[in-house]
Image (cartoon, rainbow, N blue to C red):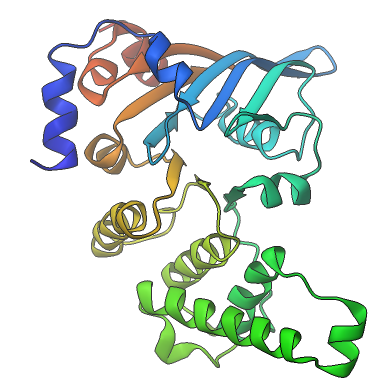
Length: 279
């Protein structure tokens, strides 16, 4: 039974729009009542969500709903003014982005942020160095431990490029890649940090239909082969409904619905948020 079929089967018995106690208890990522205001604008308020280990969840909403702000709160770009964030049982709200990356959360961005003049391979190697344990002495004198670690990082970077069909372009500048390949490279670089949870901010933006289908298969492959959980922001509703197991919907910074895809797509509040009129 496919993930999509399982999701639809579960939807027939969905208990309601809120995550159950079991989901929260076994969550890899748990956010409880997080929020932030900019001046008088409540960009995100009272956001709670729970992503289980190896889960594939979506965070959706119309333009301006607060989705990217939520990602910025989860990854430490913004500090939550209310609530708490826990990753694998550890409080991470208040930590800086590089500390959160080391704790096991990686992300991509709505606007691609690659090192364009570096090679495709070096972009991924940089991500892998988050887990590196280089010392000044080892780096200066190229000790056996330093050399072994660099070889391991190189092997992992090449493995990830192979997953994303980018190995043949490993030595090219990242900026020379087509747009869709740059998107995939950014995901590969995030995976190089060995995350427990991967946050993808509109990974299908700018992709053609075939690239989107390939992306969907790749995301599902990542879960199988790397055991990583995924939280996805995406405007392509077909992609979200096809691969996500649970979806949280934001509107004006607040959660208006949470549940399996079939529940969410038929919820009157969700229909109204997207179409401007009740279902």
